[in-house]
Length: 292
Image (cartoon, rainbow, N blue to C red; front, top):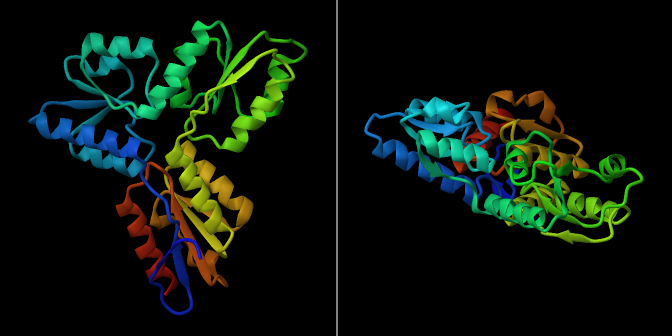
């Protein structure tokens, strides 16, 4: 039996995935921001964009005096934290010109940057398997502005059509699935003479996906907790639905509806990498009260 059983009333059982919630990169970013705020002695502390894709955490940081800057210049003369998703080098340069910068970029995102820069320096077509417009992807594209961003083999065939590229270098947004990465690589072989791959998928993300998928196959209902702006949480929900069509993605316990759980004997719970343990515990407590 996969998942950590939690107390429930009556015949309802609630199981939490073996691996769920905040990843090391998010925990590191939170520690850096909280430390900066504690040492600021009332002076402004800013993050360049929301620190993580979790609305409730961002609101809690705001209450502690941490503001969100849309542009580096918004934090001129103050402390500015580069969030876990990272930024393009040109953006970081602008930030360092106007503010005291704390770099909270996840080390695994830094690995993506290094691989993109390496492939670009080699003259390869850089291919990023990831979501167009996502902050992590946009940061990586800063090292290769002409990079091709795709998520499916169909997008590869459409973008390259009848062309043959001499060489390509492939990286993945850290929250992508291995299945998506290797499907794109397979498609690239139809359009390139040489393909080199740097698997930059985060191991913590993979473990959360695997644990969620196992649990979803064993339950009647699945609840995925995390921000709707969180790519890794949305992907968890997609993976869970493949095994358990009755999967709900929520940002808070307020979205739970008792009627949706009617007839279920076992309910599974997982959470994205930007979701603190306290929020998971809160959701489980709400489920227990709701379904009791």
